[in-house]
Length: 226
Image 1 (cartoon, rainbow, N blue to C red):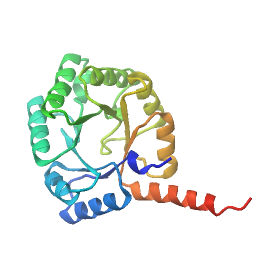
Image 2 (cartoon, rainbow, N blue to C red; image 1 turned 90 degrees about the horizontal axis):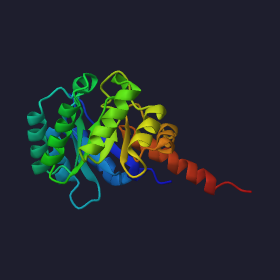
Image 3 (cartoon, helix red, strand yellow; image 1 turned 30 degrees about the vertical axis):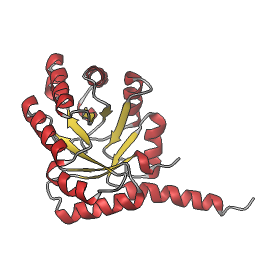
Image 4 (cartoon, rainbow, N blue to C red; image 1 turned 120 degrees about the vertical axis):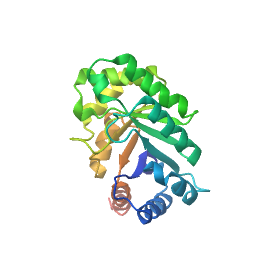
């Protein structure tokens, strides 16, 4: 299994500087990752650095709390697309979901999907803050809103992806919908567990470690005598 195209090579957080993004994009080109995931202010830079490559540019919206107005998320999405983003990872309104304000959650996701103008949209549920019932409902609303993926985590809350959550999300959305495991996926073994549970994308800052482990395993296999 080639893991490089499962990976969104990620560098987020308030202290990221331009040199970090240059390094991230060079690494993404070297390992041919699916995308880089960067803060919105670095979308233009990432897009320019990845010109003439197959690596996509992903950015985050309503990040990391999700407690933004739909109008703000829509505007942020529109600007990201104008700047060159290929994919949008939006944070769901966790409070509205927990309050069972399902119409508000649905309209929030729909607002971002519309603003994305056909670009792929992933919905971050922040599963560590939700009950299983809430996770299921968040997945159902994401599908109803015509987003493309559900995603576990921002990586900035109290927990990240778990095998249980990925399996639950996969069962809820069915076999043909995107599921992204993000937060705490740091090793080859972690990635394989998530993929086996149903993940079709991995958000990680440890993408190089994951794929070089895989390459090392294949090299060892090829050098083994029987």
